[in-house]
Image 1: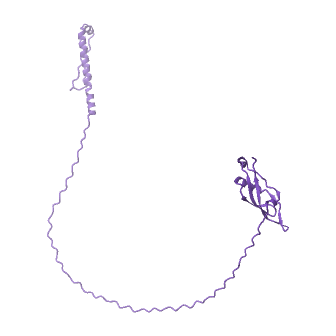
Image 2: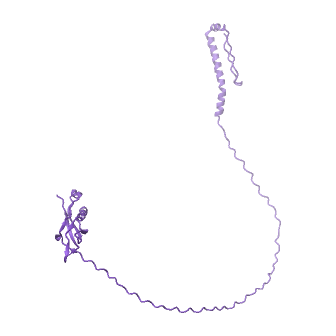
Image 3: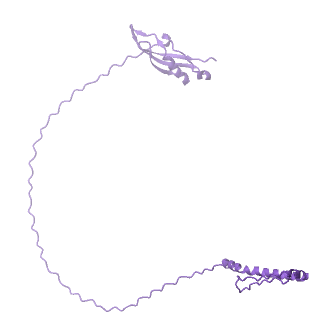
Amino acid sequence: MKPLAFVAPSPVAAPARTAVLRVPTPGAERRFGDTPPSRRLLLVGIAAFHLLAFWGLSQVQNVRHTVARLAPVVVRLVAPAEPPKPQPPVPTALPDMKAPAVTMIDPPLIAVATAPAPSPVVAALPPPPPPTPVQATPAPAPVVQVVPPPAPPALKRVPASAVRYVREPRMTVPLMSKRLRESGVVQLRVVVDVNGLPREISLAKSSGFARLDEQALQDMRSARFAPQTENGQPIEWEVIAPMSYEVDR
C-alpha cells in the first residue's frame, strides 16, 4: 500500500492550493497489513507532520492580519510653516522743498460809527389811590355762661346690718373651689334703686380667690331688697354687703 501524500503549500505560494489525495487500490489493504510495525509508525508520523505543517501555514495569514491590527499607530505633528516676514519698506528720498516767503499786508482801517447817547426818559407817576373808608369795629357779643346741672345727691350709705332682703342671694360654691378647699369672705358694693333691685354691683374687697369673687358677683344679681325711704319717698342707696363662702373641712 502506498502512503497518503499531502502537498503542503510553500510560504510564498498562494494559500488556495489544494492537496493531492491518493486513494489506494482495493488490493492495497492486504499489502499495508504486511508492512512491518516500524514502517507503519514512520508513515503515520510523516502524515501527522504534513497535517501540522498545512495547519500552520493556513494560520500565517490570520497572524499577519492580527499583527497589522495591533501595530501601534505613530502620529507625527508637523508644525505649521511660519509666514514670511514682511520686508521693511525702502526709504525714498523726499524732494527738498523750501517754504515760500510770507509777505505781511497791513489791514485796512475801518471807521466805527458811535451810537448817539440815549435821551433821558421821564416816567409819569400814577395818581395815589383814594383813601379806604374805615369800618367801625362791631361790639363783642355778650358772653353766655353755661351753668352745669347740679350734681346728683350723694347716695345714702346703709349699714349691712340694716339691710332687709325680700329674696336673699343664692350662695353657690364653685365645684373647683370645693375640690381645692377655697373659702373666704367677699365684700361687694351694691347700689339699689327705688324698687329694691341691684342696679350696680362691684367688688369692694376680694376674698383672695378670683373664682369666689366672680361667683359672688353672679349670686348678688339674684337678690331683691326692701326699698329705703326718706321723708316718705323711696330713694336709691348703697351698701357694702359681705358674702361668706365656707367649705366644710
